[in-house]
Image (cartoon, rainbow, N blue to C red):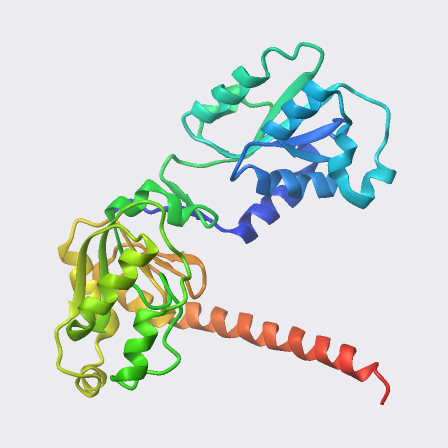
Length: 321
């Protein structure tokens, strides 16, 4: 199976930082293409110290004759007031160009301003259409910021606990667990239909699970649950990742979204098909090493704990009495 090219928020930030010299520094403002384009627009705006607006806010400012600096916050006092009559229009990606052409059409009536168009990620086709771009990617790519709203999910299998909702704090295989299912706190709710949900929740909790999914507006083709009598049997069985992998392999799904890194790696190993893991917000594919991935996760956790300790020491250590 062809590998999925994936870019995370970390990748986006790093790519902008490494290519900041490509963006014109003499523009009057940065205009982001909602919604995804607003993320890189704000990052670029912060680096260049420029006001940032959405397309609609920019057009409104043009119609009312108001200044862009109002959207720059407290830093507006440091923004140069000389006007270049240039605007940088930013989107996160260019694929087939539909969004780009729509924006060009919206801005076409404004003749007194030069519009420069940028995208962080583009296909080869977009290179000719854009004034600035950072990285050329194939058309089959996924981004962390829109994965749960992408049509790829129409052919994907999703775990429930840890993906659609928080993991259960307690599983007594009784009233408390049932209350958790009925009132689970949502986590990532997809805005597009998904092909199937694959969970190690027991079949006896189907009615409560289906009720919660309906309440949250989750649309799905099939709900596959574990047909075992109780939690003790499930724990003794213990093949969670490989069970999900078996279902995934038999399906024609092209992506699995799993909460546990360990189980995600088991799914990849048993299917050689890509898995998106919400524990690390990364795509695991054939060749992913369990030892390497777990070591990287442990390193991130240690670093997070260290930052937390340092912050607590700085905050409480400097207080008297």
